[in-house]
Length: 103
Image (cartoon, rainbow, N blue to C red; front, side):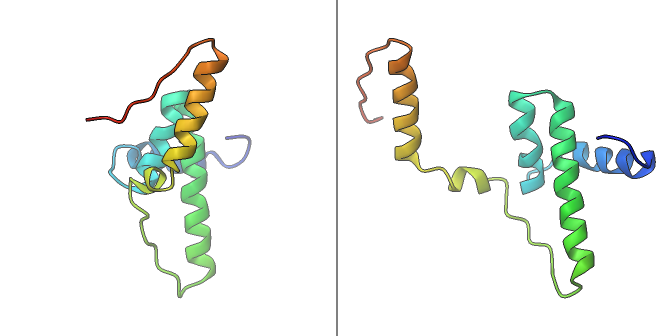
């Protein structure tokens, strides 16, 4: 997390790891990079997200936190585009692919 006061870094890191165990947007924010990269990077990314939320809530007292839900990222996926991307990747690897709808 870089240099600076170790206490806020430690508290944000613990909050990020704890958020990773919840079924919330921040929990999914932790789990997505943790699957692909090291958990430390996921901790830093989630801690930053928590800090941004805190900053905005303190900056404007009229704001209220609304959790976007753990399925936020899944709702935003364009399935046709994702299918085309995966198909293109498989073809680039030398595979011939035929798609059939799932039963």
